Length: 280
Image 1 (cartoon, rainbow, N blue to C red):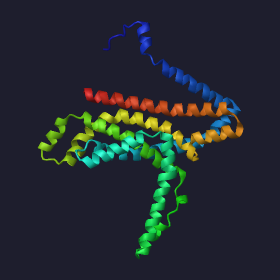
Image 2 (tube, rainbow, N blue to C red):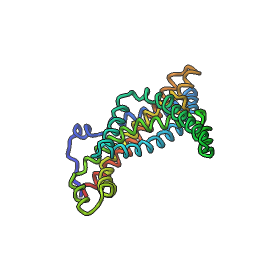
Image 3 (cartoon, one colour):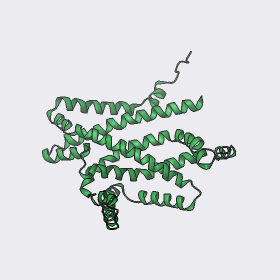
Image 4 (cartoon, rainbow, N blue to C red):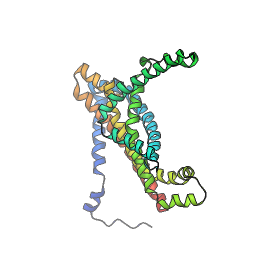
């Protein structure tokens, strides 16, 4: 039988999530405005198409960034000089450049440069007689690469550096004795990392991965500068065309707030489940 809570009202009120109540009220008020006010309703209808684009870009980009982060994170904890310094160089460069600048640089400089390089490679292959290999490469054109694809690549490369640090911290949180024990059983370094270290590390990293995903969802609004028709870009178009800045940006803010609060609750649930499993 559970013991009754004998704390005073003041003590209970300190732990009560008043912040969630206030956020809930803000969301409810905005939803009522969207339902009952024609201008807010028009702004929401204009922007709702972009919600799918925002979520899709975030999911794909974060999935790729986790793969990049895993590879680079393993490089960070590697004893090999080339792997460790290459991984560190990538992380420091990405973290040393503002995200907006990096998005412009990757989307408008790096990707066009790669496309031009592929075209030159195709012409070279054709020149040496490898026509079947060269023609597809020579036919690649920058117009074939959409801004949405460039946005995904830019976000993936940017957040790959942050994910790499999460993986590094997760791997280093596992006691070194685990690796020694695995190696003593005859496992190679790769087998020990894959079967012993990473499963424990990923379990420790789940809350950080969830928080990083929420950050990417918010930072995905930056791809609107590439004219990607996400929810932020549609809000800017609506505000610029109608001059209804209050309706556009209030609705936009609450849409992001809804998404981030929902994801935050999911992350907190995962944290509770993880801590409960650890205690048991």
